[in-house]
Length: 288
Image (cartoon, rainbow, N blue to C red; front, side, top):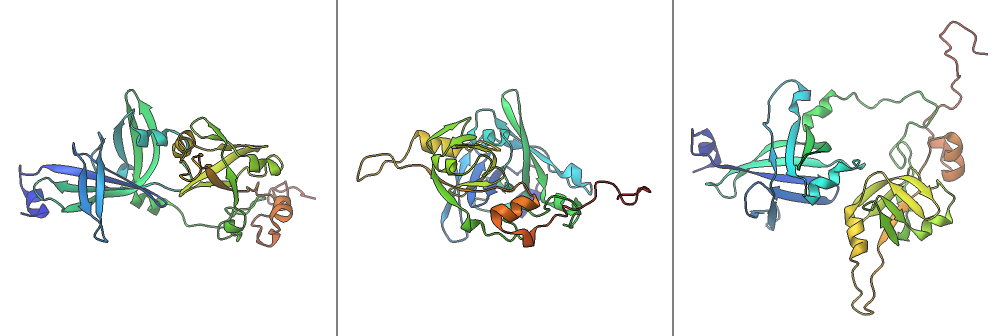
């Protein structure tokens, strides 16, 4: 008996679903089954899927891209779903749903693929919104913009700066707001705002820095894993003392030409046009 034969039957199917979330190097796997599920990985290793009270809406095949969205329902208490109630980070979280049948162990098919775009709490549940991978087809290609500020993403291809040259390792001494506000003494060596618009790295996770004053940094969204690491630090087996929680931080940019030149010495790659006249030259009046 195969997946195809059961899928084509009228009443023999007993489907279950596997949900795989990927954010950078991090992978989370859940199953709609009542117990944990194991499967074989590409390298012959065993992959474990954690049971969760998760369900999703109907998968609709349509030529209208907007209708290709999918909504997943989670319990309000589930820690993985709660992390999406804050602002999303810079790294997209992709979702792949696999479908299988209880009678055919180990055989699944890719049922749906997309990325997480938002979440909201509704009563005792969390509604996680995801859009189909085909939604990228509606986006226009990347085009250069005529604007005063730099059009390049900091440390991106157009900017040309190598972020590896700007990382500063610091010790997290305090957190608040589920690690959306951090205290890093090393950050106080630079003037206020130096790291605003920059990047914080904790393991494989990246966070966007929205504020910097002294030793305090604000992130665009919480990092629960960072808060957990500080609350229960690892103990050095030789000394018996807690191992400091380390992060890397890189400075930000306000996309202005003066900042590009003075802070990074990268004016040759500045992607803006600061001399744009304040009045429209095609408006019929003099711009002089």
